[in-house]
Image 1 (cartoon, rainbow, N blue to C red):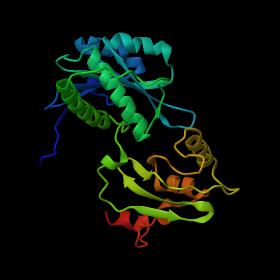
Image 2 (image 1 turned 135 degrees about the horizontal axis):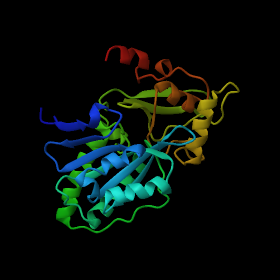
Image 3 (image 1 turned 120 degrees about the vertical axis):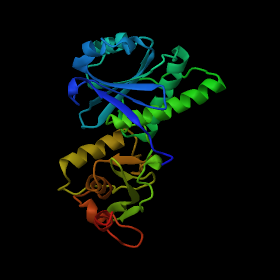
Image 4 (image 1 turned 30 degrees about the horizontal axis):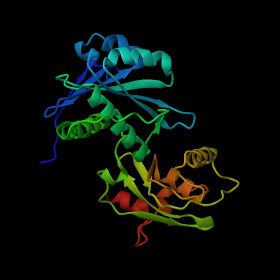
Length: 278
């Protein structure tokens, strides 16, 4: 098919939990997944000193995926520095070009673009304290780098981190929307996505919660409000992906809820029915 992609992958030592390298056969983007304790092994690679960008992944106190987005003219040197500067990450995704064409202006442009994508997607908590400076590049370079970005997103997804894709870009977008309208102002829409269930921008959540509200949902609700994803009017200001329809329904409704039966299509079909016929 026209949209089919072929990805080459090397799993070092035959262990999928260790160093992995992958690249598209039609692209010059090369991605490595490197854990904190494998920097020495990664350092044996000649291209470990290439210019590139990197994403540091971890978890926060709310069990959210976190990501720090950075760049370096010598990726290995920069990652070694991050061992001491940032102790909250456990996996790095390193992005370089297999022909080492990237320069300082390129990686500053890429760093800013990926920061913006991560902020907009809200699939992970971005831990950068400041917005990376965006460099000026030529029109030709911008076109080349935008293709580099698209290929990078695909490889990062393949390595298990879907943090740069907007809900509108999701491959499950052809499925119907689902709705909830309930007590205390809960009123909104959501959709099935490849990595969970997305509550859509503009959804209003219940203005209060029940006494038996699950503690995990309470912490998630607090995080969403504190981070500004839900505003002071109790409205989602951007699309937000939950692990499951039930966790999404509990935030929207402010009570314990089974998302498989609470989320319904415009015609009243419950989510469970749609899933069963997929």
